[in-house]
Image 1 (cartoon, rainbow, N blue to C red):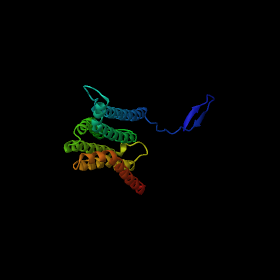
Image 2: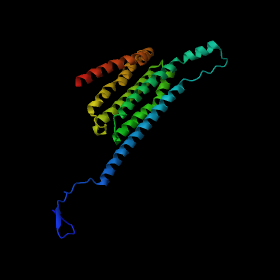
Image 3: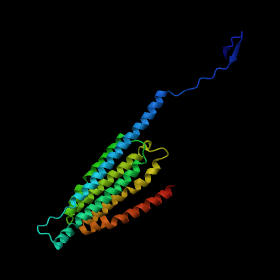
Image 4: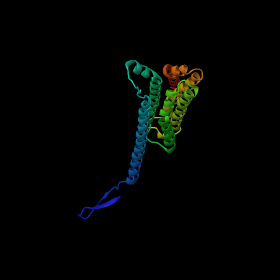
Length: 242
């Protein structure tokens, strides 16, 4: 109880309000700064990743080289363009492969609110595999008839798929990186679909050891089929889990 003088010879009592805990301004600023810093670090990681994907996908077209003819005629140019069919297929397949990885990467990064050292390291390994992809593409475009060429390309596709799966697993192992309202269960569909690229690479490798034509069939026509089958399997698993 406090006393307030009225100036008229008596005092009026009043109740003193209880002390309320007021959050320290410094701690609030530190928390806000920490969230902003995490967001900026994640944005830097995403922008850098997008740039590497864009450069690698652009460099794929370098292997589709302009034919050089001494005495250019219509039939000769037509034949020269037909000779480049493996180059067209290599460019198309690799562009779609990297495009699929970029779509997954884009979706996964959209689920995060921060990154950590482990995620950054695995992401850097993924970008290494992506940046190297134009070289296996050049190999298969030039030596598509050789088992070594097919094996080298499909082997690197498997490596790319495994690193991509490890990236998703590293996020699932650190649920604190996920945005508000998201849990590890939200990463399960991505983990199941991460087998698609690996399965395509394994099937194409096996087919390529028989004949190079079979490998190209798997990479071009078999890829959508494998994607559909694994996608349906993942969807059934998600429904069962839900």
